[in-house]
Image (cartoon, rainbow, N blue to C red; front, side):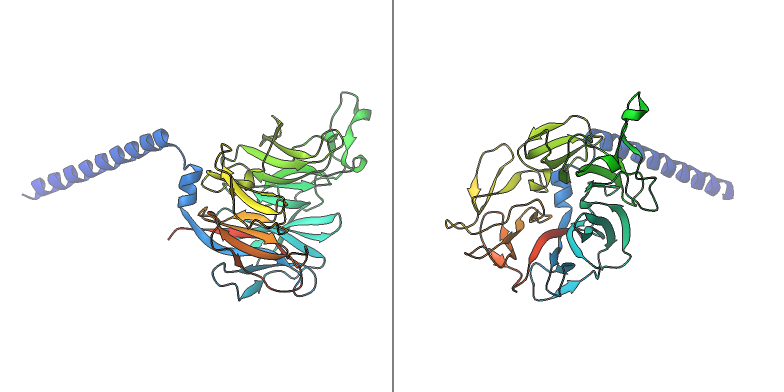
Length: 340
């Protein structure tokens, strides 16, 4: 009887192991068939968190956060000399990358969502996280940046078979697009040294491409995209961060008014009033909510002064003012949070 019990137990364990193997194989096949999350699925998996922004309310610009549904409380996160601006949330909402410094002496920082654990990663500005959170694209005047993770600033930007014709960062003026690991390591220049003033990088939802603004002397001012390794340069109409997280809509500003349209160009809709008010267009003053239902933007008064932060539903309803003071409040960015 004892032998039969032992045999039955062994048989049950064997059956359980077989079921686990079959289930694992089934899940693997399902993943291969379905693939990773689409941008729409990723958007559905997040909820709206806080809004980070830059404000001069305490003197020089610093980074703050506020709740979109209750804007009375503003929490200051930084205390850094110079100007602190361009907050960018990591895809999981746990970290913020931002720019700090004066004039061209700018640096990319990261910190936790509560302002703790500040770290300087690179010389540059305009940080943008890759969708998987492992890399940051940015604009920099130095190659590579002078941080603990980098080598000499006189490392070549481009090489020639004749070493006397190498182009070095110290010989070139202008801003270039770079990418680096999220810890500041492996800083790589993506745009060519003979095409200057590239800034405002934004990753595509797939993480395969990067868009940016280019105003160099060999190319007219415009918006471009390239592969994440710097190849395949092509002119486009809108930066990738103009697209809603679900990939369905584009937000843009025209003649002081806010508009959306479908990604195929159809369905253009004016969101703000007929009378043009100074809705500020730059890559850091428009941001979609993670659920794609709202837009946060910066707008001035009828005289083009006193720029403040507003939200509006994606259908144009319920415009709401979040900041009220006489100083600059701008660069709003909406925190993505995992859905409970």
